[in-house]
Length: 128
Image: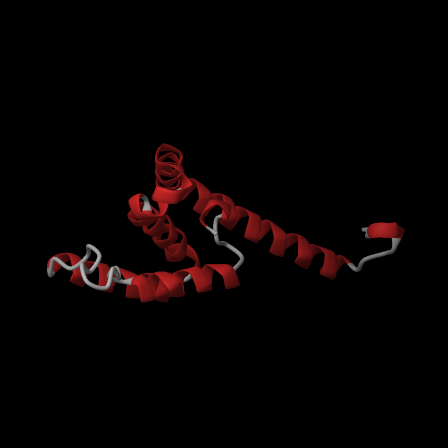
């Protein structure tokens, strides 16, 4: 028999469901972390190299890569929107920040990715 905290009896179906849910989330998290490890380490190394103040501008593209990698596994629709925007911006030569406004292409999509990853509780700690 399974017992929970305090020695209370937990029904077999409830405990197995909770175990399965936690195990599935943990396995997915490990899979995504492993898949996005190269992008994440590149971003963290960039932050270390440039320091906190200049890292935002210098490492912004790497940060977006990490967010995109995670979003492909947690928020596929939002990831596809970002991919479309990115490819259009690169093909038209507009991916770099606007000289007058300073606004980068695809910022709206990046904010959507962040929002979706927060909801899924999958936003990597170093990116928050």
